[in-house]
Length: 270
Length: 278
Image 1: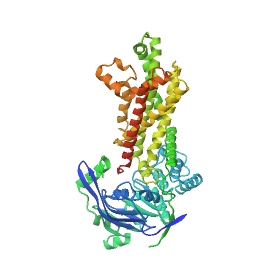
Image 2: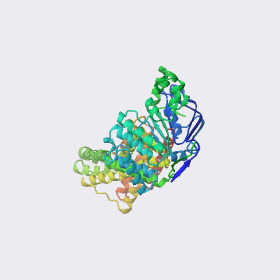
Image 3: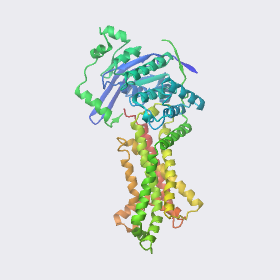
Image 4: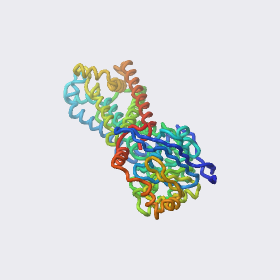
């Protein structure tokens, strides 16, 4: 069953993306270049509104790039979106679970949509419930789960199809320290199994703990890239916090407003 | 860089039939878990049935059927007149619920999840549309049962019932596709059922509750040409055993369902394929 992903898992070259809204056109990604080797964890860091979620949106086929080439698992996201979708798993910022169904039913839904077959689907569901410590709550409606449990189920659903590339957009935001550590353990286990992970985070400790490589996104460009140790050494900083502060400008009022409007406003995107 | 062993993607080719079936079962499972919505589908028409028959029926009945005296005879005549209308309204009510349901999927992360999976793109919305057609059919049986308990005795024969089933399924599909699009087009879950509410008003501005020839010219003109008048007249004719049902009216009803359904499907499809809002 294992196939070999040779070459980089993610290749982004000259990616540009802008949004059109009532307040005018706003360039979010301004020529992003990034390569993520297979079987590694790369953390995408950046201030609010830097374009982290937009980058993940393009990589996961939800958004279309204005310019540039983007390849995921060897497939072009614009030309072969279905091949990309068959290779990826996405855990977005909004928890993507069906609250009316139980944990088991949510996972079985994913198994069916991944065309796993009945026996395989049941086996995979039981495996993931166990792995994420959800076996006890498996038969209860998700609406009764805590935030941390929902997030764990969310990630488990992402993994049902055994994707080779996984995107995690701020996966631990809002989680308590214990749930956060559980998720970190899961991420480490995935990478040991050969999965490639791109995660965005605002927690620099998270990047420090998990990432083989860190890319800092600011003003729509990657402004620094390297291992956490390299970045600290180059910037003569004690922590990634200091690196982050050195590399990113505080956003202006206007930028914050625009980022805010993007998330709350309905808009015309190209 | 080392080549890394990973699990193979299961399949890159969407399987529409399997995916639609999966999504339909999800929709029905949600209905079972949250019966409030289905109960609402029955409760609305039921309240209207009781109100219109037992409060207004005595007086209105004399107005819809010639030679009927007000009172008990009027109520019976009015029950005959509006039961078909309330069955149509039941189908419309199901459609307003599908708008809310689609908006909930879009607002939560689950629709984005579906869009990043290698599944048939049409299956996500088709599952909702078909699921609510099934719910509307269940609600229709209950509303019809209530009317029967109140004394309603339709004259429809086997073929008439079959034609009615076809009409309700076709109307359900058409309105559900239209309302799925309205739900996706809404800015929030709260406003998702606003646009479909207009559809609930239309039976009132047609031959649903009173004959159109009692209306002033401008209203009558609208009533005669809007889609719900031929649809209600067709249901009424079939329930009466085909008596007084003109072929042209039935053809108009069929035509309207096809037009509304195709337009709704095309609109929903384009909204779904639109770049995802992040």
